[in-house]
Length: 316
Image (cartoon, rainbow, N blue to C red; front, side, top):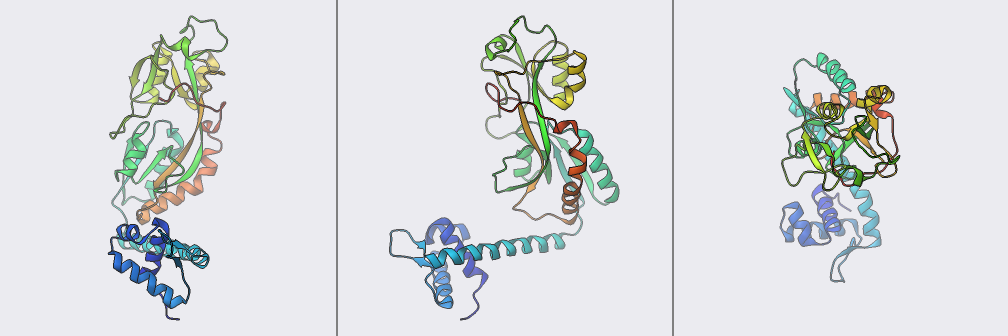
């Protein structure tokens, strides 16, 4: 048996993953005959049939499934090795672009960034604040090297470090509502103004969190402005609990959380692209966040939780 090549392994993996030679050829940007020949050569060298070609669609044999499982591990290791080599070739980055999302408690993260960039003076920090769908969009558009926000944990393009939980609670100023109900319902709020944060995402429709259908909206750029609007009795809305703990204790704000408006708990993460290489400074920052997060965020007010669930509709 002769040694097989990485290209042959990639061709076999693509056929199994995409369900056929034609689809594999498109995914690999190779010709159909080239992919077919690579897999056939791999089978000859191994002395086993990896694919069952008797049906309408090719599928792996029992031996092919077992071999594919091991081959995927090798291909994953090769991908990581390529990424590492690319990082080494890049040298130290001159700039890093970091986006903080609207429900990131700024204190702990800014303190970490201050300490980190004091040690990496050759790299300039570009810091931006984005809201709702904006942070993830900047990351996927290649406009951010790292974001601190919420992400889809199942998106294969993104890897993340969990930093903690952020509780959102619906609040209003005392006397904002005339109702005497013990448990406020969405219908009680439909005639009132709801403060929502402007989504900074540029593509597609904006994401709505906690939206009351039919309610008048007051759109604000950030959580701090939203809090001021609510404190002055101009609207009600959902705010991160860490931002309103003091006002809730003093009575300047009143929670209207209940069975019909339960609030929510969001997972805050540091996230970066999993499918692109990262330079040495970006990698060092990633490792600093990973080692620091347990100590920094486990005692943060953001880690405190309220009852789970979602409200009527979805606008933050």
